[in-house]
Image 1: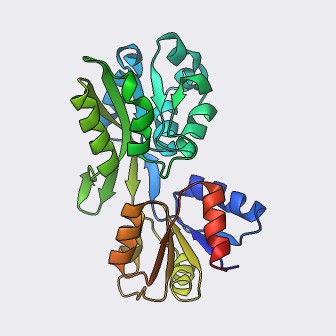
Image 2: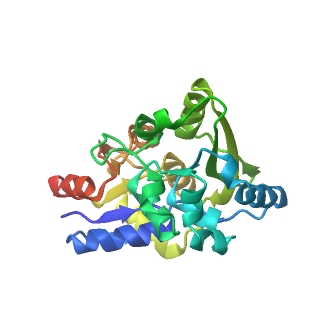
Length: 270
């Protein structure tokens, strides 16, 4: 069975390496997105204000597990008092099971969490909306908790096809949308060992497990002269698969981001 390169941010990558290892898959973490708290004063103030106004939101939509972690981390009392969401009838929306798991770990009651159906073709904003569209009434407000990207050129809001699409659906249903930044994404700083691992994995039959288009961009930026024609990618969304093909990956397959689907795809490539 081929080795798998897990490219999620460090915290999730470690979890996936453990899960895959328990299934007999040789997996190694090579995070392609660095995650950290957002230290911008204006963003921190907006986050504090969002914590204080939970009751005004119909729902809080978290774009990822990192959004959950960094939304609750500055206010541990809020995280520990997850029953508050139930008391004020605010829902927590998760685009996938990883985000839902992070919400439960933060203390949010499972009964307050909405997400795509377990058998949804994809875990994304489109699948989430199929489950939650009936919750929105005219005048309802949804808070979307997201991250932002930092580059050598500065900090900027990266395009978010899913969250922007979701915002348009909410507005079309008569609701309003607010955004708050809870964390910051950036390119990884590869060690010499990580550079060597990436170069080897580009041509030795390893499978790159890709779960972000931004991660693909970081990989090609970190190894600008690398040829990817012999590399194998397993992408967990069509948009990510498109980014991998554009980067030059010779073999690109798609699968749902659920563990069972990922393992089955890896085993089929053996």
